[in-house]
Length: 99
Image 1 (cartoon, rainbow, N blue to C red):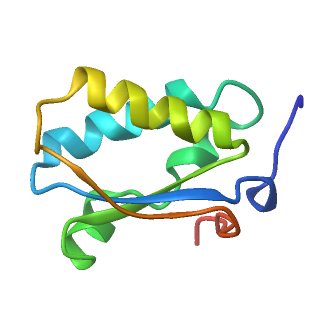
Image 2 (cartoon, rainbow, N blue to C red):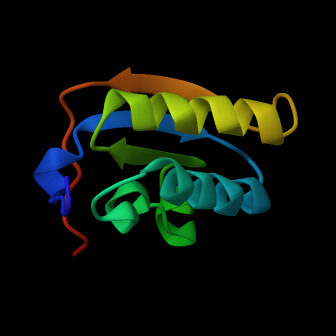
């Protein structure tokens, strides 16, 4: 898959963290975990402002379940326990283009 669109990134994960530094780590891990296509779509909409508005929650979107699972595995491996948590996982939740 050479290029991907927002519609292709329909494997989402909503996470919560109270630490801004952890949010930025998660954003980097999302980019790292989306191994093909447009890696930036994985973390579109995870700005500090949106995180603050959404009570410290954001969604990441991946084009394959494998990429989302790699994101979870890497975050669990690298980040401190209880610094973030999974709120919801959805296989039919496409990313929205940045407004």
